[in-house]
Image 1 (tube, rainbow, N blue to C red):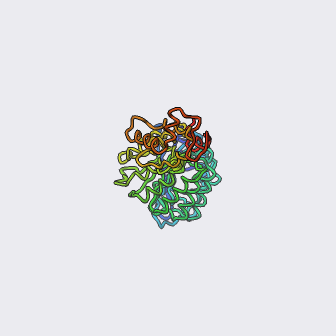
Image 2: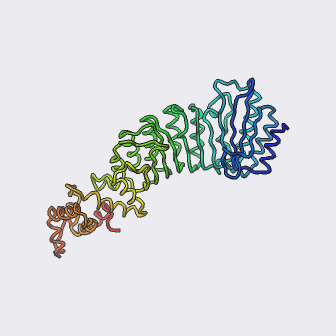
Image 3: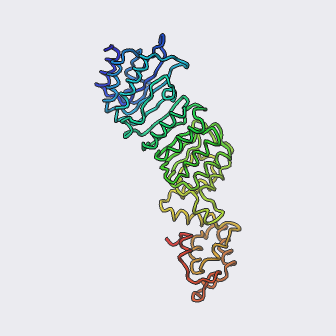
Length: 405
């Protein structure tokens, strides 16, 4: 066995590194070099105690290294980097050696974090990394795709992998601007129903719409979503908000990283998703689970207040508080209450915060427009009826307002 590869195998066996980075680089002729970096205790690749560089020759040697990768149960993180300059002719010997590395890595059952450059998966002159049958499917938590572009065939493989793997995080925020066509992007995003956290860069309105459709999917499991973008505007934020309105799983929404800003985008769009106070029913169907939005600098007070309310675990209570605080304002629609039994309306009034001037006006408005309520409050309970003529019909009202809990 070549000394350099023997050293690498020995290092793997003796030191059990937690991570490995493999860069495929051009060499003389049509051969390829593999540059291996194995971090120490810190897990950082910047200060690696051992690095190995070897030209890809003699498949048997690389089979032994691949087997060492597969047997290393301490290995948690893998990075596969593409340093080849396209177009680059891959000779058969290099192809077989890369295949030996891949087959060994696919047998590892402890990997939790994998980053792969897309071109290593997309280039038909290179062997494919077999996600479908890899043994790390059960242990993998983080899957990140980096530089490169994706073809339709590869998007089918990745979407199938996502559908059958419960990932903590799927990250496609570092791919090339034109990495996906719309069909591939839609296929991959739609397959993310089991993913808990999604990092995504959207570059077209169609891509924002695709992600919003994922948020509306009743079986989605997303807990965190981070959008990376060049710019944000009302149209894009409206699409995101439309996805949020009926979502019941998302807790964290991140709008931009690394100096990105939503600029002067009107965040009242988000406020409507969190509390659409145009009607009682629309408040019911607003988002009551989102707890954090970043950055917060441009957010309206109502957005921050609704996020705080959403931290309450009892969602019926969240709805009641939003109705009390944001529905009884100004010239609100009183018709839903006029149709209710008068005996229930005191419970509605009890929701209104008396120390708020606007909501004191709401109490006065209800008493003025539903005079029967005054009779009820003064003790004339026996003959009290709603404006629709019904008596003591509590059930429908309590069900609609959820105020009886």
